[in-house]
Amino acid sequence: MTGLSFKGIGRRLGLAGISLAGSLLAAEALVRLFFPVHVWQVPDASRDWQADARLGWTQKPNYVSVGKRPTGAVVRFETNGDGVQPATAQPARTAGQTRIMIFGDSTVVGRSVPEDQRLHSRLRTLLGAAGHPAEVINAGVEGYSTDQSLIRMEILLPRYRPDVVIHCVCGNDFWGNVRGTNSGLSKPRYVLTDNGSLREQAPAPNAKLATATKWPIAWIHRSALYGLAWPTLTVWRARYGTVQDRMLLGLTDAIYVDSQTLESIDWNLFQTLLRRMRSVCDARGARFLFYATPDLPEVWNPWIEKREKTLRLGPGQYDRYALEKRLQQISDRDKLDFVPMIGVFLKQQDRGPFHLLPADRHCNDAGYRLTAEALAQAVGDELNNRTRASP
Image 1 (tube, rainbow, N blue to C red):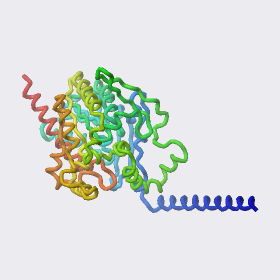
Image 2: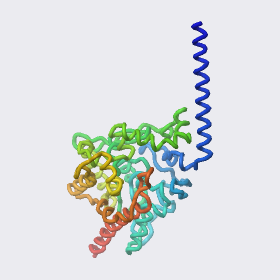
Image 3: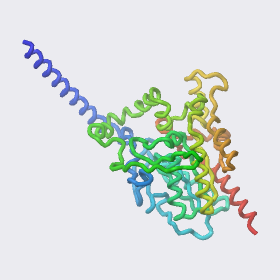
Image 4: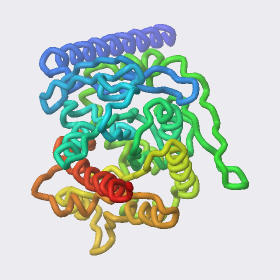
């Protein structure tokens, strides 16, 4: 009897498993049939990458990708032979034009909007209208932290010889800088030596550039059901994960309400990386500027007001300037050129929202346009000063 009972239980479990698998397959088919692909397909930046022995990964050269965004926009993404935008960019300089290069992560790349709305296109247009013909090259790579952007500068500046270099700081940079991995991939990192210099640590080889390569995880990540649930899963991970998890997801909210989170950042390492960037630029005769991406928790009042209510914060407990003030202190201490953004956005709230709400916290066209206006003012001032200083 016992044997028969176990067989019966096993049979029932088997039937239940088959029934569950059938239900999941049916649900998968229904989602794919009735929902547009852009609704359930999880974006995977690794499709744009190729492995790199020094950087861990880099942007594929001569790459073309066409996709549809949740907004309905069809977005074409192209790179040149060095994996930078626009695809027409060439190492040879164009006479009479200032050359600008921008470095950073996905907030610089701008994959979520058409190219004419991305930061490099907006900045080129604004500078031209102000009487400063310019070539603006976008050297951002999704997933990069400050250390990788530094290395990419060292590689590309001798080839492209820019006049001005701009680096975009993103909140997830700070935790990426202290790790040798990001999203399951190996990356380089720098270690501060006893004398305060930087020692580069090479990444382990990335055989396959995918955040989920083994079955069944890879299949789950590509499934429509997972994609449909992905925004909710991200919220859960943000809510119950560690501070490091939140920061690597780009969810920097804790910085503005918790001073301990801000102080947990390795500011000494970050500041040394910025100094090295300036040194690399100085050696090539380029002016170095940096700014922090205008993040949603800093610049959009309706979102901040909702967040204050959710967290039941009293007056003054939420400090939207927390990160920017620290970056300004670094700028003042090391005489680095920093371009603040928050005040610019606060004066232009009627032009918002500035991000691809509700699911995507990257900038939309309004966000990139306003960022470009602030940078164009800073770069224009620099170019005017050079003109006045010329004999």
